[in-house]
Length: 283
Image (cartoon, rainbow, N blue to C red):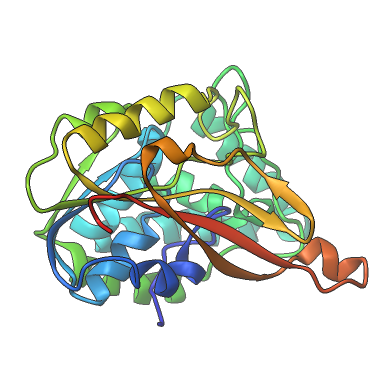
């Protein structure tokens, strides 16, 4: 499945989307992503024409602004991104300093979709990192200049064609989205960095407790809502994250995420598996 994407984003399920979509109904009314990230599952679902509409939510408001602009006004986002992207070449070999200049403006309050998009396109491993003060604090990848505007333009137009007129964008706590659920909805939940960060997620400056999340899933069970959850995983003999309790009634499947990069560097061939929990109502 060739899924268009906005930018490389650590934690994205784009490469796993084809496997995840196999556990969805063939057709349903609306897909909800309470932890959207770059909304790769919504984009993949739209590509397969499974859902009629979409609700995309993420606590990271500037990130949601990128998604909304990509879908509703891609030409404007591309034009603004081009200005920032080409500006870095005026710095010559010192182009990483341009990244820091854009980052400083962003942290000072100029949180435009194009500026964050540039920071994501140039930062190390496409990894979003915020400090405790709420400032974006990731460093630039000094070996590259970030996504070429031509590549970005092609992908944004493809994404806009898939989601425009069908998508609502929100930025808030994931539990507030649950109040908007209606019959025919399917929820895909991908809580960030479960098993990697504990009480604080560097993407949001705050964490999601295990107990809180389990209670939220019980809320969905009580209302017989269909949902899928990407949560824990394993690589070789090492487990990442805490498994969801059997009392929720979900069935756990393992999604092959490919060879672990760390294992490959060590000359091993361990495969990483990510867990996908399917709700009892969906089963």
